[in-house]
Amino acid sequence: MIRTIFFDYDGVLTTDKNGSLTTCRYLSEASGVAFSSISTALQPYAGALFTGKVRHAEIWPGVCETLGADLDIRLLFEAFESTPLNAPMVSLARKLQANHSIGIITDNPIDRMDHLRAYQNLDALFDPIVASAEIGSSKHGQEIFLSAMSRAGATPEQCIFIDNSEPNVVMARTLGMHAIFHDDGKNDIDALASELRRFGARWDN
Image (cartoon, rainbow, N blue to C red; front, top):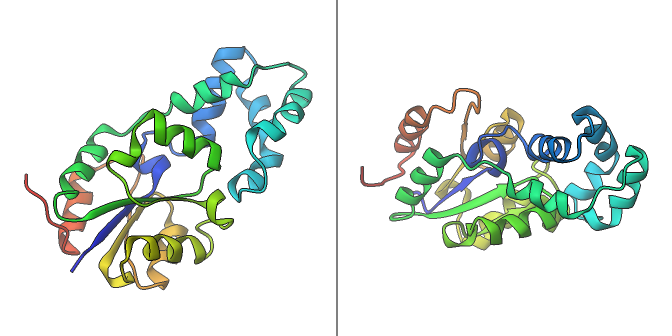
């Protein structure tokens, strides 16, 4: 029996493939600095951000120095807020909530997810929400999945995990979770729904 369904955030619950794309695009459009320059300036800090070793406020002076531009850090939080939710996917999650607990497992900086939890009211639908920066480990390892299942009070066989990255899906499966690859380019919600039903997920149409 399926108890909990976990969604990846970027590329599944959002229409952008990853959060870096969202953030760099907004910062570039707001500042006039080239997308590639912003991406290059942020890249050296990605590992530390995603594992919770630093927050954006700590690395922002270094980013600005690399860019040669004094960007107001408030632009960064506006960039977080520009994250485009995948409305049909969120609608499906709401339907599933009637019969299952619904959670998020995501590789993300803690300050971005904290901001989005409040801005998008994610906690009203998703519990638990587990970010790599909080755990100190990404979905390349087991820890984040084990922590999420523990918080949900569910065994691997009681869980479904949805992600737009094949390696993350494989990792979940090695732990005994049911896992579904979602092609973010196609964003085929009907195909995903069929897979969910195959694993025993239930909802009213």
